Image (cartoon, rainbow, N blue to C red; front, side):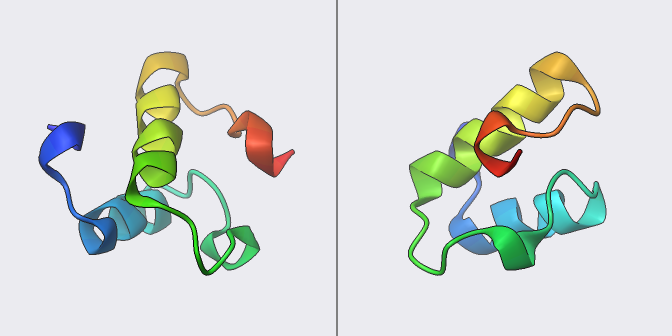
Length: 53
């Protein structure tokens, strides 16, 4: 499912699930980086993504 999401959908998933503070993410973050954040959250549960610690 994550592989089929576009940048806006990934950002919304991150916002809705409070995975990380979207405002802390760089403006030029790639879709692949966003997918990585969402995948890690799915695999690890509610833990903060390592790049945002």
